[in-house]
Image (cartoon, rainbow, N blue to C red):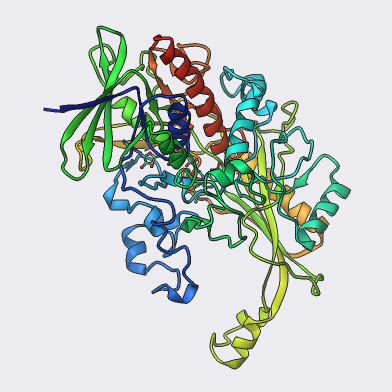
Amino acid sequence: MAKEVDAFDAIVIGSGISGGWAAKELCEKGLKTLVLERGRNVEHLKDYPTAMMDPWEFEHRGQMTEKFKEKNPIISKAAGFGEDTAHFFIEDEDHPYIQEKPFDWIRGYQVGGRSLTWGRACQRWSDNEFKAPARDGYGIEWPIGYEDIAPWYSHVEKFIGVCGNEDGIDAMPDGNFLPPFEFNCVEQHMQDKISEHYPDRHLVQGRWAQLTQPQDIHLKQGRGRCQSRNLCMRGCPFGGYFSSVSSTLPWAEKTGNLTIRPFSVAHSIIYDEQTGKASGVKVIDTNTKEELIFSTSLIFVNASALNSTLILLNSKSNRFPNGLGNDNGLLGRYVCFHLYRGWAGGRLEGFKDKYYYGRKPSEPILANYRNLYENNMDFVGGYTTFTGAYRTRKEKVNEGNRPQIGADFKKALTEAGDWHIYMYMQGETIPKKTNRVYLSKNKTDDWGIPLLVTDVDYDENDEKMINDFLKQSREMLEKIGCKDIYANDNEQAPGLDIHEMGGVRMGNDPETSLLNKWNQMHECKNVFVTDGACMASTGNQSPSILYMSLTARAADYAAELFKKGEL
Ligand SMILES: Cc1cc2nc3c(=O)[nH]c(=O)nc-3n(C[C@H](O)[C@H](O)[C@H](O)COP(=O)(O)OP(=O)(O)OC[C@H]3O[C@@H](n4cnc5c(N)ncnc54)[C@H](O)[C@@H]3O)c2cc1C
């Protein structure tokens, strides 16, 4: 029997990128807020054990052992996963799910969620991305447009600190930026060549959540300037990049209105048939396995796209036998992701007298140039290209079977080799009813919660987009002057992009969507879902800053309703 414990004005489920923002906004507006987090606590500075370690201080020089990789085939594939960051990722067997089709679900269960390990790319969506799905017939109409979210992008950018350049291009609107990182000489050469050969393609500085020039608001958060160490995923002792742990959560805590409860898995949302609203959250304490109930009149679901969907599917009542708000049967449907299968690169001769200083933690971006104003390709949607140029160590090191030992090897390591350029895509995918997640009927996790089943796959549109990316990238690399060009489809499973979206999508029509334009459930007005689950389509920009902006906007609206007693 679940024990009723405590009541709060608001409950936020999940303390990652979006949950941190919900907590900050609600606490600042005076609501006593409980944040439920299934993982352990992570405290800024104190819990970054590898942040200041040198490569030789790691037992396996940064690599995971073969034994670990065999036992953890999914998480071992994640970008940035290694001996230095493993403590911020889960282990596969602790958190099983069922893959009806291959799907790599990459998770970080701790206070801060994946805000600790994210890549920090922060482009705004263009108006085109909001309009294209309905215009080109591959999605429903978004209930909001760029003009609705633009002020909230600014609100978020100013607080987290996003560096970048004002480039004035349609595909990626400008924001409130700190100074950008600089191109190195080859990246500058790439920009010159691309604009010479393709006037409609724009290679610009990365827009990244990195404090290149901290402002007063960042100093007040106790954060300082990015040191260009590019070791962000270990947690930054300087607070140089944005995470919930370094920024939104401590800010919320300072208001005196925040309670964070780690080791607390949200099992389900409790629905009160009499009031027609959610009345609280059922939680399992992961240490004691005790069932607890926390009451509230406002719930923000921010457990990340698939976990938020899971919680709602598991929130069954007489009124909602198929999951909270699921009258139309679409909860768990229209799951989508970003297409990361195309990679290309090459070697560039010359520029041998040039090098660069520091390890830039951002990457240049080639803004989307496909289907921008109309659908004029044989596929729908667009893709962003991340790119960059770097020098390897002297090539001699890897020549033939030369032993990786001895004086020659040591000397070669101290000399710079050729320049190399890489490009990879981040493509839009079509939200499809057939791409779905649902609850297992007979398998549960350690806490008695049904396992999630993923039934998500690529389609023909994806294949056409990949081919276009590979062809175009090869052509651009040739024009830039590269040799030894490669352009490959890495054939990775969906999910490894770590940009899973959908499942509880927004829309104007309750027949075809679960959330209204305020991220509020059509059928249960005191529940808001503001993480990736709410996405009606994927766009081609890195998504997290949109989740943060949607969260801040929804929290503002919800707090008003709360104050008026309308929740
Ligand atoms: C290596 C890597 C690189 C990335 N690069 C980028 C990038 O450059 N740009 C970008 O925009 N995005 C990037 N992402 C994606 C980004 O991290 C996610 O989009 C973002 O973290 C999602 O925020 P969220 O709040 O939805 O979920 P998360 O940050 O994952 O947080 C969810 C939280 O909810 C908790 N939780 C889950 N289930 C429950 C439950 N039942 N009860 C209680 N708590 C629960 C989890 O433990 C977690 O703390 C990257 C991710 C990774 C891992």
